[in-house]
Length: 400
Ligand SMILES: Cc1ncc(COP(=O)(O)O)c(C=O)c1O
Image 1 (cartoon, rainbow, N blue to C red):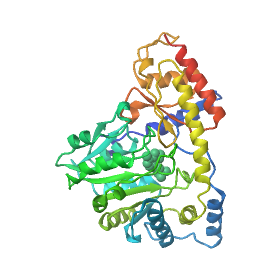
Image 2: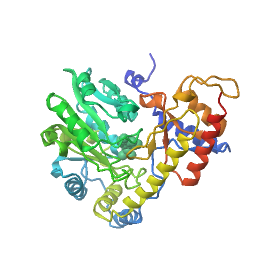
Image 3: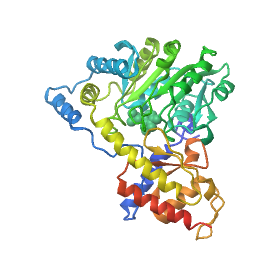
Image 4: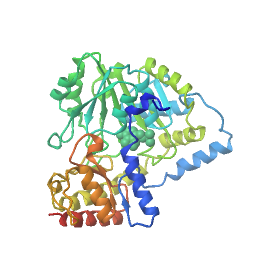
């Protein structure tokens, strides 16, 4: 037995971070690598948010705060939920943490007992199953293939639910596919959940503001108010407000779980940075003008990447509704041979081939539970994206 606890054997380091790091290392070695593996906007944090943080420092807001969020921030979050989602939450129903990831971690840690099942539609964000595993729960992946638009079908959800099911995790728009659920699709999911009163739903809405072509975002507790008492609505500042490094996420839900999450956080990280929280108040209450501006840029990039990837031999790239990812199939490249004589057997090998032969870093679909695909983040400049897609086209054309 080693010194490291058994629980750590149940998780693996985030494969997306691993790929992003590999690209950074190659770049540092002087290699010409375009990294499209990381999940963060390339835009700077809007200046009104940065100024609010500076003012907070100057006012001396540099002390501990209430563990799960300042009253000002909780108030701003309640107003956001009401204004944008039609959801009524009181401040004692709000939990603020150091990133959406911590809030998710808290929620699962305080609810999942060994053997509890958590339904996770696949492809999924890599942290969902691993946090469930860390809690000694069982992630139950339900495959949502491309011909379902990468979305959960009600009959598949119904079949996956057992007496042990504690949560369904929804993520719309999705990391890694960009797929987003319409109100009608959420209605169908909600109808299944109404038949299973023991199942709670954790909806990860962190890409809420990144949708295109007039897609209307909806969230499940608003679509079906009967689910409100067993829904945790998770969101965060990283994506819409370009604040990945600031670390701020939050959730609204029933008081019982919010209290438990605060207890856990009080014994781990305490409050998120006081300065970040002040910035978060400005992000939610201040101008939202940059959101559609960024959206228009992301949409252009999405269209560019989808078009160019669909021109590559062996790739098929659907048009996603939101987020800043595309999730093409590389089924047509699998089984082909590289110039070096290697037959590509998996999407992981395909992604390694892209990195080694043309210096483009993307993440294999295997990491997200649906192969053979790969995830491309288009949170990069159009020039970089054009160059990366041209290189991918060349790499695909060189296979035989
Ligand atoms: C689907 C999804 N949820 C939550 C997060 C958490 O983000 P953060 O911890 O930066 O708030 C991410 C980040 O990549 C994500 O993709």
